[in-house]
Length: 398
Image 1 (cartoon, rainbow, N blue to C red):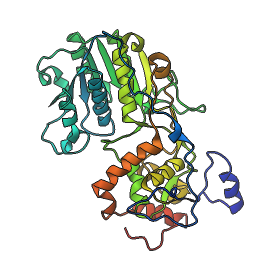
Image 2: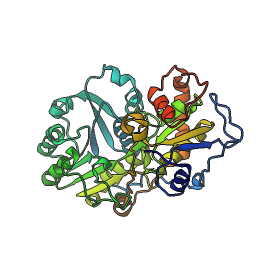
Image 3: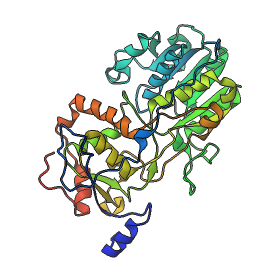
Image 4: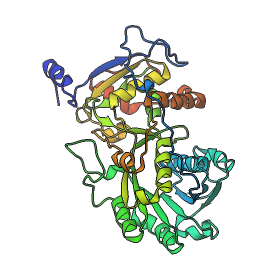
C-alpha cells in the first residue's frame, strides 16, 4: 500500500487514518534520564493537565460495624492478570478482611522468583495466607478452610473455572467473583465498550460468565484491559522503554491515534474490594474493570518517554506494507480497544485513581533499577519495519 506525499498529508489530518511518518517528542526540561540526553529541537510532549487531578481514596470506607469477610483469591501464576490478585489482596487487607491467596503451581518454581509473586511477603506480613496448588482440587489446597467470597483469577474457560466454581458452591461460598476480559467484546463502530455491548459468544470467558450466573445468586464478572503498576510482570511499558533508552525510533502500527485503556492495578483491586463490601449491589453484574480515561498509542509512547526523561521518535507504519504481523511487532492491539467503567461508578460508587503519566514514572523507576536498559538487545522486527518505510536508524547499537 503506497502513499503519495499529498495523500499522506491528508491522512495525517484525519483522526484514526494511517500515515507512515516520524513524530518526535522530547521531555519537559525538569525531567532527565540516565540513559538518554534530550534531543535539541524536538517537540515537547503535552501532559494534558492530568497531574492536577486529585487522587481519590482507592477503596470506599466500610460502614461502621460491617462484617469482615474471609476471601479466597485463586490466582494465576503467569500473564498480566497475576498482579490483579496481588493488588486485590492488598486492598482487602487494608480494609480489614481476611485473605488467602491460592497460586497455581509450586511455591518453588522459577515463576515465583518474579513479581508479583516475589513480593508475597508484603501480603503475609499484613496477615494474608499464601498457598500453592491445583485449582482443580481447591479443597485440598486450602486445607478445608471455609470462605465467604472466592475470586477466580486463573481460568479463561469453563474447563478451568468449573472445578473452582463447583467447589465454591458445594462449600457454601456466599459470593463468587470472576476475572473475565474486555477482549471478549465484539468490535464496535461506537467506542468505548460499555457493559451490555455484544460479546464473542464463542469466547471461553463468556461461557464462564453464563455458568456462574446460573449457579450463584451472588456473582459478578470483571472485564479488565491493559494494566500498569509496580509488580506487573507483563512487558507493555517495557517495550517502549527498551527502545526509548537506546535512542531507537518507536514503530507504532497505523496512525497511532488508536484509543486504548491502561489502568493501574490498584484501581482493579479497589473495584473488586467494593464488590466484596457491597455484595447486594454487585450481584449479577458485569463490570468493565478499567480506568476512566483512554490514551492513544502515540500518546502512550510520549508518556513513556516523559517518564524516562527522554526524547522519543515515533514512526507510524502500515503493517501490511512493511510485511509484518502487528501482533508480533507491537504489544497492543492495532485498533480502538477502549472500554469505560460505567457500571462500577454507577453501582459501586467507585472512583479511578489511575494517573498514567505519573504511574509510568513508577514503572520506569523499576525498569531503570532492574538494569534492563543496559542489556544487549536485538530489534530485528523493528529494523525490518524501519527499512520498509525508509526510516532505518543510523549508527544505533543493538
